[in-house]
Image (cartoon, rainbow, N blue to C red; front, side, top):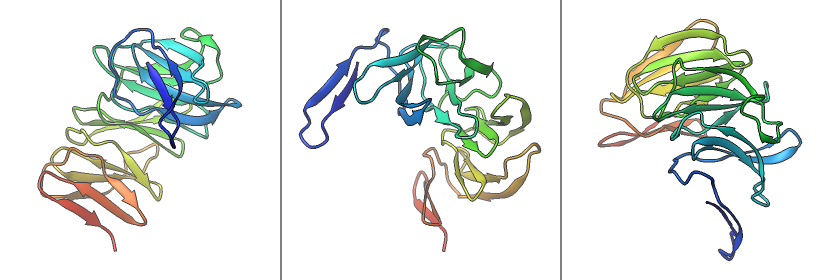
Length: 222
């Protein structure tokens, strides 16, 4: 079920059952989309949007797989929501979030099974949707059409992608940070080894990057 609590008191504000009673691991995406506040979740054998004020469901897409780990992302330019997963089937969906009810057959704008990530969350940067598979193949798509711009092997990944100043940071499991400028061609700006295994996503704050490795916490910046 989904549960909303009063932040001050812990009182239950609403509780909404989910249909399939299977686990999922994603953080919800909450945005003002299509003229309403939407809380979008992937998991429970579905992708679904709820009103976070009441728990009422706006729309639902069946599947396309059972479990999701990577969180959904939204592009302000295209207005689309992007979902990647999962287990046991691999799918990448771009969804128009203006529907009502079951929109499985009507609101998927584009879809592919190329470059699908199970654990690392993808990212939007400009006109590009970027993603890296767990096995380490990065893909860059045109966010609007789903056209594949490029793919590049960058090493196995658990960390999610982050961006700053128009650049996207890929931190692989071996602790190598690949800094990429999104665009129609693959452009690696820098490649820097941290010196130890890394599985956690980098955090960016006030011009500094924080990286948690196997043995050290590293801050990079002035």
